[in-house]
Length: 81
Image (cartoon, rainbow, N blue to C red; front, side, top):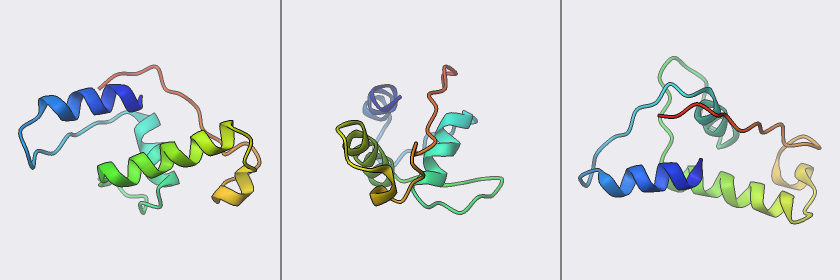
């Protein structure tokens, strides 16, 4: 998903906003600390921090040290933007 978003961001004019209804992206926003609401704003740098935290867990860092549960409860969504 990170690669897909990065590709899309590269295609957008500067200062554009990308909208999505993807539940996986919504979950990433929640992991980034965005308050749950009907419309949530996830900044690119916050999304990148979540992916960095996920990479650390994949490499063996305990998820609880990254502010998550033991599994970090992250599921990939196959839905696209």
